[in-house]
Image (cartoon, rainbow, N blue to C red; front, top):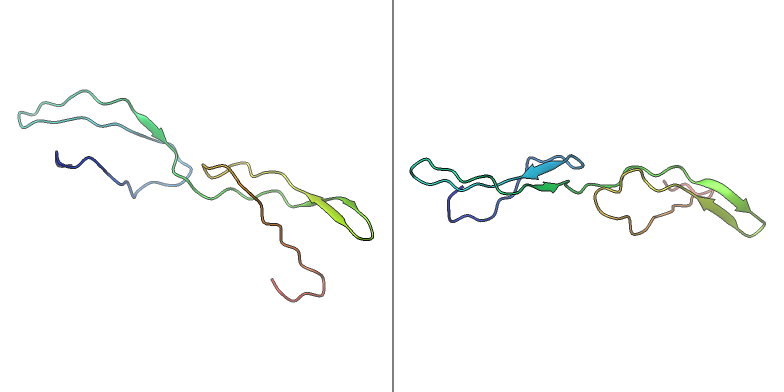
Length: 93
């Protein structure tokens, strides 16, 4: 990279894999500085699949479901869940 460039975007990464980035400075005489301290990064991705919901309790006017969190959050905290409900007679989905 040219000496005037102080930013780099790596578009070859794979989400969920570990990468460590280092930088060094080079001069026209072939000299190279020591590597900088490495910065570990895991690119963000989508969370893994949650468990299927299971029935906890039910009555004539309620149903309570529960599920487990995903084993991997994609690199950022899960902030909410979307629970989809389909009635037997509903043709959607």
